[in-house]
Image (cartoon, rainbow, N blue to C red; front, side):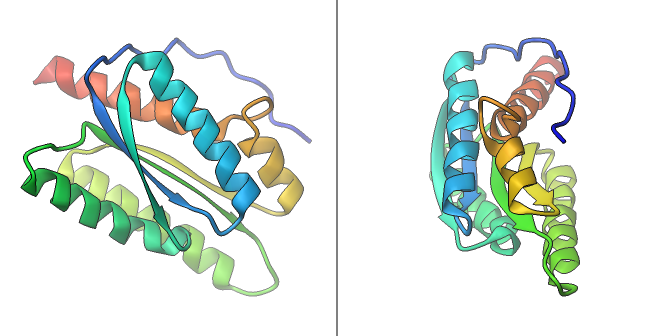
Length: 160
């Protein structure tokens, strides 16, 4: 069953803002849909973005930290980060570890670094749920993650 569609305010336009998208392509088609949604949201906001890939959802937090440090060292820090991936429940406890630990690490990093984060790592019971949520025409969770990062980045700018 698809989730009910929610109406939300249009994300702010942030021309010149720069975001990092870190994606896990473990599920190639799901990853492509998530990335399409995030790209469209950033383009609509006038924001730029770079894309980095990680092997899976559990590796995303380390990839984010490495990319953030590299960007800061080059004097080109990011205004925010969007993480994209999918974890589908299987028959073992591995699902809980990957889903929980990737989310925990990202939230810890977001708070510690005061980072505008849009977490688009899906955690679903099956592939059908993942497809419904990832597809920009149905769930657009990649776009939702980008819009969340845009809103928090705009908040940070307004309070700076």
